[in-house]
Amino acid sequence: MVRWGKRRFQATSVSIGEQKWEDLNMDCLVNIFGRLGIESLLLDVPFVCKSWSKATLSPLCWQRLIFPNMSLDPSRYDFFTCRLMVEYQVKGVFSITSFMKSVINRSRRSATTVALPSCCTEEALVYVAEVCPDLRTLELPYNLHRNLKLKIPNLISKWENLEHLILECDFEIPIIAEISIHCKNFHSLTVKRARMGKVEASAIVTLLPKIRPGMGSQNESMEGYEEWRGAYFQVVYRL
Image 1 (cartoon, rainbow, N blue to C red):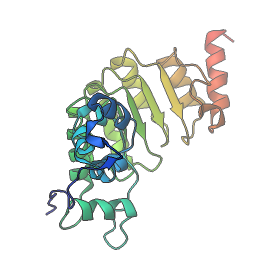
Image 2: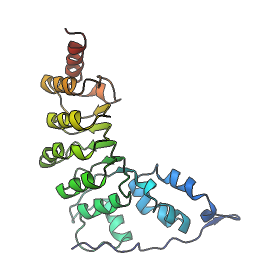
Image 3: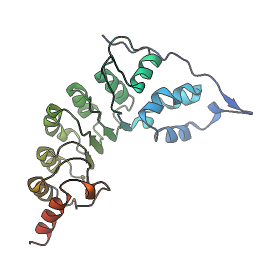
Image 4: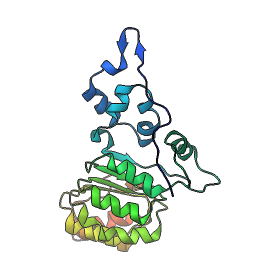
């Protein structure tokens, strides 16, 4: 049983000269913190001073959720996981599902970008679908479990506002098929490590005709880019 406790240290008032950190404009702080990563928002910023800690409670700081890849082996936790367990007094074996839910809840249903960790669980994935209705960008890691990739097509309908998909894992045609049905604002596909053959390339052109090869800085270097490019021009120019 994992229990998330309160932070081990309490933020205190800090000043530089005669100006106190807590006197800085709250909206300004939230705007800045919203550009930081999860690690900084959880383990660094809240411990600077009380006003910074308060600012991190705003859901606007948690609209962009890029989950780091974490080692969940109790015998060799990574540095990030170890810090989390110490600072938040996590007892027992670290639960990635509890952690992801805790972070997602901070967005209060306003998250627009989610990058899943490779250790994501099915329960956490379904939770993202249920409580992130305004998701615009979804990133799937290269070593995401096969069973989870098979679940994603059934969840796409929850993300009607999805605009951008980043694929590091193997290409999955069913995901693209569901996007073509449910995500009318979809306009960008970035493929980093996924392998793509003629069948997959033709599927993109057929199901997502507005997506052109080269849209996304990583696409030109991916395996299968030429197949995608060839299929696209065959359709456009009726070759």
